[in-house]
Image (cartoon, rainbow, N blue to C red; front, side):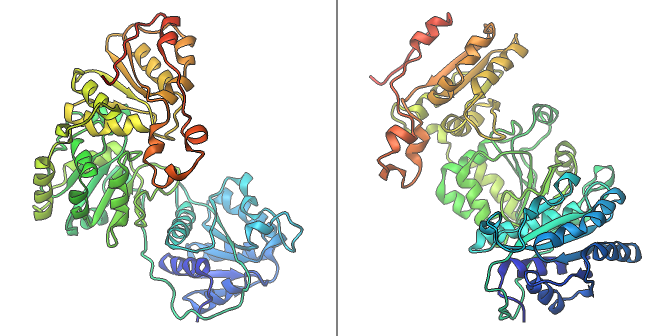
Length: 505
């Protein structure tokens, strides 16, 4: 029987999927449930009383087995005793996994016994370190799995080295009532030589029923390099570029986002994820909701990225090389891929929807009239979501600060883009809050003559209107959506800009 602590059970289950067979155990009450679980599991345990000695015993086991070894200690100063061994492991690139039990976070710094800031115990050594959550729902469980895998992956990245997992455990501690560990999938980490797709990844693609390549926001250099790559049709892979990827048939994602019936039928069993942010929220939620899907993440991320919550495998290779190799794969014709290629190409076009005068109507109207060579910089929040629906259907590339998704700096970025491309037209599509927030963009520099600004001024942050339940708050208008009555007319005059306005008749 295992303990009743869900985070401890998940950790135990995940360790059993890896090549960790030896665990050095130091005595203590807070880590007793860990010791119990490891004793019940498929591990060889080595009891050592002194933590400093325990760390070096673990290093000796690594030398003997050429495999990762864990050392488990209780809370408080016990974890500090491992410092010499962790430093040695760091310098020698040895895969030492420190597992430290801890008090709940609410008791750190409250004069409770055996407490200190354990998550940062080895911070100055710059080793991978995570703090597991205590699990209350499925999202906590996914978070816990991801953090454990992040630490385990950290031991093998680059030339390898130690990692630290800190695990808070609440009382009551000693209830051993769980018959079986949770079922977990072994997630793989690949760092292929010469940046070639691993054979195991290719086999997973070959065996998938409906493998989908979701391409998030790409860097300008990668988008340019792929501009002549045929991402439109592949009988064995369904390519689904995000509107901000600026490659291929980006209108497909918009059609899935805008059609709930089509989206509900869309059920890929393998998601290959490259690039950055995903703009379409409903499509992202759909891909997360698929119970039997698996995922593979490609890229040089600083940490494990599992956007679609499927315990993704991780292939460390450049996005450009990964996409080029995926495009050139010779795969058997997959009936579901062929069918979804057809359905997405033939789905109703959201540009044909009748709209009243609104920001959506104005966005569509503007984008329909821009030449394809126009550089379009889009502000975050409502504008980028609206532009993502219409722009791909008109062949327009979109640029947006979608790394952190903040409203600051959108206008300044557009100014910089126009300065750097003086022979091309740059159009900035921006909401009122983002525009007024970033007015210094108009003051700091000589404004380039090739810049046009389209301001969607509806007097507040309109995206807040779409958040379910928020309309019931009396604070919405004044304190949340930042309602205002400011016009840009006087500002345009101050900066010597021509001002045109369109309003509902």
